[in-house]
Amino acid sequence: MSKITVVGSFAVGMTIRTDTMPVFGETIRGRDFDFGPGGKGSNQSVGVARLGADSALVTCLGEDQLANVARDLYAAEGVDTSGIRYTSERATGAGVIVLNAEGENFIILDMGANELMDAAFVDGARERIARSDIVMTVLEIPVPAAQRAMELGKAAGARTILNPAPATALPDAIFAHVDYLTPNATELRILMGLDPDDPTPTRDLAGQLRRRGVGNVIVTMGPEGALVLTDEHDVIVPSPQVEVVDTTGAGDAFNAGLAVALGEGQPLLDAVRFATCCGAHACTRLGVIPSLPTRAELDALFEFN
Image 1 (cartoon, rainbow, N blue to C red):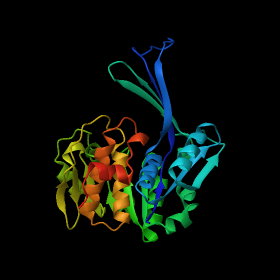
Image 2: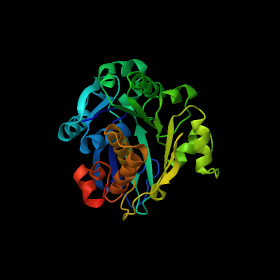
Image 3: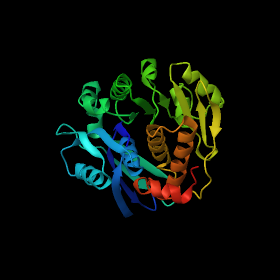
Image 4: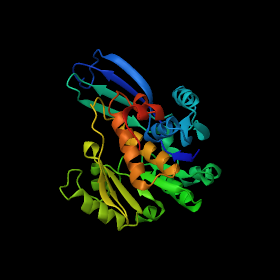
């Protein structure tokens, strides 16, 4: 069983629906309140565990009731929590989402304790990272923490995956420690300092990014599949066609699937195909955690020969 460590974020999402958006000073009635675990690092660690790998999460939580949502989740999913630290300095990360009848929303996000993660914090998980086959990170935590995760993973001989979401400017120094960079098409453009809808061809931008020091660039493109650009490959791996219900968890499912397949020793294109199937499966269900597939669920939908 491969060991996969995710250095990333946890936050509780709280959603309420309303017919109209309030104005300042107004109190209105809402409905269908819901809350549950989120954060890209947390989601990916759960996705990895469901696919059968030895999964661990390195993150920071507050000493509060919201942290119990994380504890319950990881106990149920079998995620190693030895890399989680608790603090009284900040609250557990949380987001408030308000949806109107047209499906439009606004979101207020406080990443809370996640923002206390830095290079020294990640050093505290050095032992687990050193025993990992794959080390993953995201950008919902401070960049110095993500960079340190890649540095320690690379130094330990693990393969490293950076999912640059949400995208932000990155120092070139980080790329030398990244084996696989997995932006979506919009994030790719932001990484290159462009507008999210810049018309430059995706392949051209991926090539420019590789020249900044990334080993392998894998750009997820939704139903169009995933572009794989490496020294050996320049190909689009198609995505299975499914009836889309909710795309929210697709990126996290893709990255979890990629990590697990690589950890099992699958060749890169096979690993990307497996990952696209994970992402497609996530689109068939509402919500992130419910959409992350088990191995049995994937086998029921797709054939892996």
